[in-house]
Length: 95
Image (cartoon, rainbow, N blue to C red; front, side, top):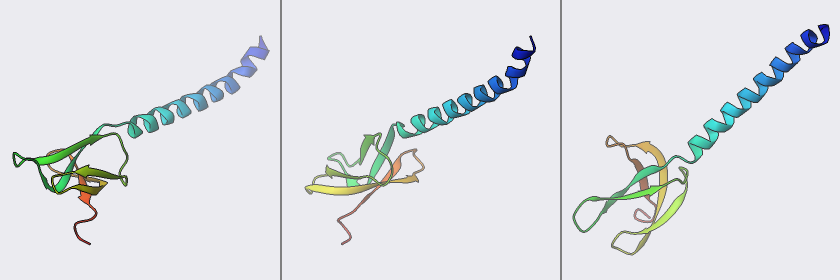
């Protein structure tokens, strides 16, 4: 019986490592696949509403959208607006 009692600390240590790695993996996966709504700054649709882009892409990604003036590039950011959407900044307008 002492062999089982001697193995308990190693088993619990291994179990703790597995649990910590599982939680970290779950958190990273959850954060990576989060669906976000982005407002394309200074862009409006035919009705005058801001143009929204929904994606799971990470901040820093550059996307191309046609917003009425032809294709334009936007950079997705981590900046959150008061309405709960995130900012997508135009790349080509200010050059």
